[in-house]
Length: 303
Image (cartoon, rainbow, N blue to C red; front, side, top):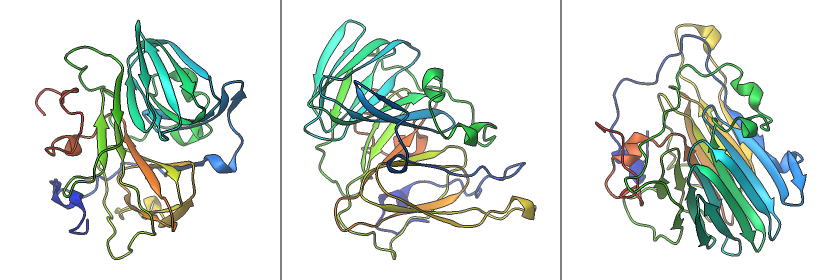
């Protein structure tokens, strides 16, 4: 249920309504990095971890010259450089590229390293195949039993020219009818939402649900309230109370299907949210012009 000013109002709907679980609903998971000590603190910086069913988010305050390596990485991962003053030299499978800040970078599987220039905050996204990183997540208990509404993870096709380092700048002009700044790879879709500089208009919210995938909302700047409501089922034991969870920055909110949800920016100042989907979501991919790097990464056969 979108306000008509929201570009998502034009998305097709299945008309089937929210999916009904055979058991109780899976709860959301909130990890507020600002409230807890980092999982890692060493010469490279401070790192906090959070996960969803299919993915891991690593938020790092990196020192100048910090180096982060992956050996035998099973699949493509993502590096987010939110700030212009923090750059990275990325090396992967014999290729090296200097990546300026304010960018989303897709890093190939295999051996790779990221060397930070200037220090500052970075975000890395991995699938749950990176079991060493999954083990670092403080919210692992939320996924002791997988949510049956979420299909097993399956990557999207590899780029036709093969995997390589791909940097996409965030200096993209707002365009009427397009929702945010969306980039996709073989494992993730990243929607770097247009920033808000004041509290959201509560007469133009966007309550909606997803049948079969999680939404990860990464708060980089500002303050937000995540509003969640679950549909009733015939079994009252499965009903859940509404939630209105306050999350400042940095934080992660993992919103499960089929909860009805919307998010409200709260701060008079910069409110920056990044929505993350693993694997990429199909409805956004089908909208012409929404995925800014669609030519680099194909959709699955039959899409």
